[in-house]
Length: 309
Image (cartoon, rainbow, N blue to C red; front, side, top):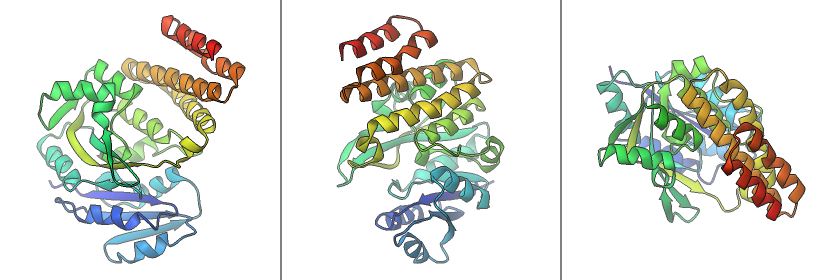
């Protein structure tokens, strides 16, 4: 049976980039079932841009409620059996959907799929690729040994992926029924909400298909919120992961290990952001929980590094 993909594009004040995102979905070598744009209370011409694609795009408008609410609204309205997501400032590679859809048709045991993608700056300059820059990605590339398809399934692979995943939201494909079962993206969080959902999905998955070639482009913005206020972003990161760690008590051991590792990294990053602002005491307090959660030289070294400033 041919998989029907619904592509959900949340958009907030994205008039400058939305057309490019939509056109990259329309250009897919495997035609999608539908494109759903969720305008999250934009004050620019985002809705007008979406309307230019009348007949090819379903437009949903909502008051500004955040990206999680927008993605969830799009998934709720979707009529396809598989979901894919794309942020309005990113775009898909031509075979992004095809590479997943053909594999789904050939192997009905895959719980979800992901893959590699490119990092580019605002000017379109290639900055690198995701799998090569993450330990979990390098692990899967080595396992693939040049093949386009590789399955993530061992505890070590799962733990590494949860700790520092290579596949972002726009490379993820999953059954709509599983998305609804999991309750979608968490609301009330502005950073790391994608990790929160992805980890809950992985906890319910046994075999994850990985395409070891680029499925799209993720744009790195020099003026992003994370770069404008790294302390606030890292605090929010820790807050989101704290909720995830609570849920992880009921996850498989490999997923729990990955969450614990990711939390340690988040605490360390918060400490570094505070230290750069000269807030040494706050930096030390940010990393001290690492000693209790994961006693050992690595945690102790993080505390000592904050003491040294």
